Length: 402
Image (cartoon, rainbow, N blue to C red; front, side):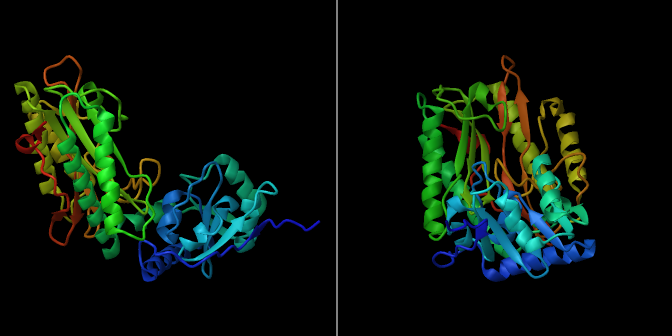
């Protein structure tokens, strides 16, 4: 009987058109290798969707199987399961090894074929599970294991011109979804129906702008009434009613890159108490955007917006930070926690960073003005300020609809 391989190379077909040119990936790997050299790391094993995608172009679908990327000073290899056949190789700018499931832990045998034993090994401490850490020790016997999650996050936080161009296109797609949602709103329609209108419009727009991309994961959170109280509340089948507060949230995904548009709206009319809260949050949004510029820390921006709300006796209704970074992330991978507008983040804004401004106030059910109010724009930090790349209007003049 022919022995079944533990792993092999299945380079089927020709390489796909990736989100970025080869020189963009070469530059990322060169930057990573420089960081590895500074830390004395001889090999890195990445296991997260965001870092595998960032450095290779391949966004994996785990479905309970492990995936990875191995980088040394000479090699760059994605590690994928046999169920995906040649697709991971086609969508990796680099080499690829396919592991088989004929025997348990062939994934680690494939990694060991590149890394060997006794390496000074870099890993993602914020992603590697306890179980996989034990297997890493068994199969690779590293001399030392170092956490690269902070170093890689710092690299991802600073966007290239090519990344900013993709994010800019994503923001435009999010606007398309926003307008489609606005057009769909009317009393009696369900949240889910409105959400589907926005999602479909965005997916068609992505396909038009990026004919060689892979299409997956674009979504909408569209909430009404009580369901607006949380930023990440799921869509329901609730039917809209006149006077409802609404939260529009469009999220186009382009090759692993997330962008967003978020707006407060009302169905046909807005009462006086709600209008007061809404206008205050809009004012905070405009003020917050004016604070985003190079040389200012995330904590300093946060404190100034806190003061703005406190002076209006509204700070107690704030529910989370005022903004976050953009890039290779989604609702299930990739947060760049070092670039968030919170009191405990001292990162200083630099040209090339991309960050949102998104103040939110939540008024409890039964209180005047009840509901969640949130506006969200994406800004690119420039040499002397910030460029707002979101186009859909915010505020009562445009968003009392239906």
